[in-house]
Structure formats: C-alpha cells, structure tokens
Length: 310
Length: 323
Image 1 (cartoon, one colour):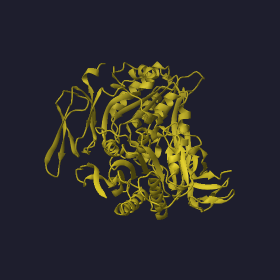
Image 2 (image 1 turned 60 degrees about the vertical axis):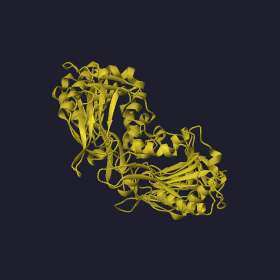
Image 3 (image 1 turned 45 degrees about the vertical axis):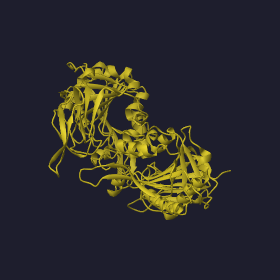
Image 4 (image 1 turned 90 degrees about the vertical axis):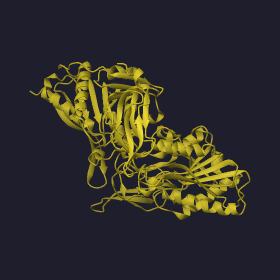
C-alpha cells in the first residue's frame, strides 16, 4: 500500500487541505473508489477505511492481479468534516457539483479539478455518496442514464438493487456524470446510512466492491457472491409523503419487506402527541428509502417503496 | 374613491413542523378598476436569504406608486421574500434543507415542500409581461448594477435590459446547471425575466436601489403600467460574452487576507495594482494582485479572507466596454 497526497491547498491559518489516496498494486489504472465528499458523510469514509484494511491484507497475500492498480480516496473534503459542515467551509458550495472542475477557477472548482485529473483515467469508478435528503437506503448501485451506463456491469457488484435515474440539470456537474462522459464505467454506491456508521452495511459494501473487482479480474478473491440484482428506475419508486408536518416516528427500517396495509410510520403533533398522519403501505414491497430525522416537513417524501415483482 | 387596490396576497403556503406556517407573500398594487388587458410586472427578490439589496427596491417601488396612485395603469406584483425563512435567519439557502432555492425550479406541485413552493411561485408569475429577479451577489463580492442574460434568451431580453437603468448587461453562455434557476424557468414560460445583480450580500446600497427603481419605473412606463414622468435611463455597456472570453477573472493564487486598493467601478490598466494578499501572522505581503489587462473593474472582493481560487474581482476587457 502506498499513500499519496493527491491534492493540496495551503490555508492561511488552518493546516493544509489534503486529499489523500491509498494505492494498491501497480500498472493499469483499474478501479478508483472515492468516499466522502461532504462533511457529514461519515459512513462513506468509514466504508473506505474498512476497504483499505481489506485491500492491504489482499496485497500482502499477493492477491492484487499483476498490472492492476487500485486507488481508494476515503475523503475528498477533510476541512468540512472537521468543522461538521456538509458543504465547503467558506462559501457553502458542493464539491460534487463542480466536476469536471477548473484549475483556474474558484476553490471548490480547483479541488474538483485536482481530484478529477488524478482519477479520470481509471477504467472503473465507484463513488460512495449520499442523497440530498436525509435518510436511510436499501443498499444499491445507482447510475445515471447518460447513454453510457453499463447495467450488466453494475449487477456484478451483487448489491440488492441497481437503480437508474435520468440526470437532472444539476447532475451534470457531479463526479459520476463526468466520469461517465470521460469513459469511466462509473457507479454510485449507496450504503444504508450517511451521518451515522452502520457497520453491517459498510461490510456489505466492501464485499460488493471486492466481488466486483474479482469479476473484473483486478484481484484474486473468492468471497461473497451477493444478490442477483434487481434493476429498477427511480420513476418506479412510490413516494409516501408527509401530508402534515410534525414529528416523524418510523415503525420499519430501510430494506425491510412490508405488506399492503402495514403501518410504516406516524407523524405526530409535537405539542399534543396526537397522530396527524398514519403512513401505511399501499403495496407489498421493499422500503427503499426511509426518512431518518425527527422533523417531518409537509409534502416531503418520508418513505419510498419498490413494489414486489409480479 | 380610491384609484388603486393595494393588497398583500398569499402566493404559497406550507406547514412547518412546530407551530409555524411557511408563507410566501406578494404585494399587489393595481388600478381600482381593472381589466383583463392590463399589463403586469413582477419584481422578485430574496431567493437567496443573504441578498438584501432588493428589499429597498421593493419598498421604494411601492412607496413611489402609493405617493401618486392615480398614475398607475397596470398591475405591479412585488415579491420581497421568496425564501422568507432564509432572510429571517440570515441563511443563503433554504434553512433545514441546506438547499439553494435557485436550483430547484421549475419545481413540482407534487414534489417535496420546496419543490411545491417553487412551482406555486412560478405559477403565480406566469403570464406577466416582464419579471425582474433581483440578486445581490453574495457576502464575498460587490457588483456594479448589472443584468445577466443567458444567450438563449438574449433577443427577447436585451431590449428590456437596455431600458433598465443598469450600468452593464452581461450576456453569458448557456450552462445546463442554470436550467434549474427561477429566471431560466420563467423565460421558458415566455415571461421575459431579467436577472439583476448589484451591490453585496447582507447589505443595502441605497444608491443602487434608487437606480434600479428608476429603471423599473422606466420599464413600467414602456409597458403601459405607469403614466408618470420617468426621465431618461443610463446607456449600459453590453458585453456579448457567449464564449466567456470578455472578462478577466482575478482568482487568488494563494490563501491569505486580501486588501483591495482600487476603487470599485474604475477603469484599470494592465499591470496596475488592484490589491494584495497579506499574511498577518508573518507581517508580510504574500502577493500583489495586478490587472492582467486594461478594462473595467466591475466586481470587487468585499470579504477579505481568501483561499487559493477565491474570486477577488472581475475586469471587463476594455475593447468590449462599448456603450
């Protein structure tokens, strides 16, 4: 394992801003895994740390294939993590809305460019990312439909779901989108949580990435085969929204199978504890997304369901 | 008998979790006897909660109309706070969601609370003859009064922009990301919508507010909404910068504290010192900042702390500073 500082900015009073990479094997730039890009993505950095530990052991056993190089970047934004701020510390911009970056532009454009220059040549790219809404997910590989997405390849992670979605205007400045445009097979990997650590989900994600690497002939590894992934589109998700604001109390967990008519959550009056809304499942299916905060805001999706296959 | 109707109207409403309603309101002023054929102007501001320059403009438009209500012959809708909680809590984005409101348009009536509010706002502005979306840069930069126009809409918007009493009209190239803005969405609904940038975040520059208000009255007269005297308007510089080559961007080469030395809005020459970056800890100047070419310093840094890449100013190249 080799450690490299891939990008650095000198600050006036803080220690340098550093993006650190961990390299395994030598040769063709085979796969890059990048973790947290926002300051609250603890699960993403944790998952990468676990992966680094596993790859270190595999390398010591000589199980990285000859001529293959793996890069893991656990954190692209230490400054925001250390100040507990989701976006950039000074101007609140999002590094994951700055790709492919610009080396003569503003700070987060430069960071995006500095990272992208290091990772744009990799054949496969995996980004551990989080959703703009706070919540827990059923583990999934998510891909934008750019015309270059490779669904069959996505299935080889062995995650329960491969989710496809049409890019919105702001998606065109994400790492995943630009990786695809620059001909990297790019995948976003969603584990269950974001700002809290879920060890079981992190283990599943690590196993899925190793599984993928093994199938793509990057490592010599026999382990978890995973699921036969089901491919769904985000337009197939059924959103259950808060008809009223209030306190949100969930009765289920992300990934659980639920039956039509089953109570999934309630929204209560914060002053009287009276139930303002009982959220029940209209279908048999899986909880794909579950709001994980106490406050529920009106009209906001609390739960997203994937219906069972016929 | 009153010559006008003057009402504050609810545009959109949603329920907050703890004993509070999120309400977006507008101030509608219209002739007492209204007809279907009256022209309508919308003045919108406060999408970013830390941009306050438009607050004075909203007040001043209403004040001038109410002073001479008999001169009003069309409908004026004033939306001072698109992001009311952001303004009240000094937050640029939508509080609780940390979301840039100007990246969620056209919204979605069946979407989450913010998407719903965005769709209701857009619906309310639809059908207007002109809309002005007033911004105030951010807390880092000061801008001279200017209009920003997406090249896709320039043919419709430049004639209005020329009459808006601003100092600069900056036509910029299209960007996919900007398709989520209020102005792009409303222009796509065939409501000519001008984006105004002036002044600086968290402050009100009364001089700019009056300049903008004069321009709005000139436009209202042109649209048949106001029949009072309006005087003349400034002849703006129009920069057709679709390729992004008309402007020098002064980005900080290193981190430090920026000390500006050149007056905002002045003409500068190549090599002229604009400012410098200093290191207060070491007591040293780290780097002089010089103009890379001749031109007009139309943006300057207001917030002194910079990091590598921070924007310290913009200079419009001299050869395109043609009025």
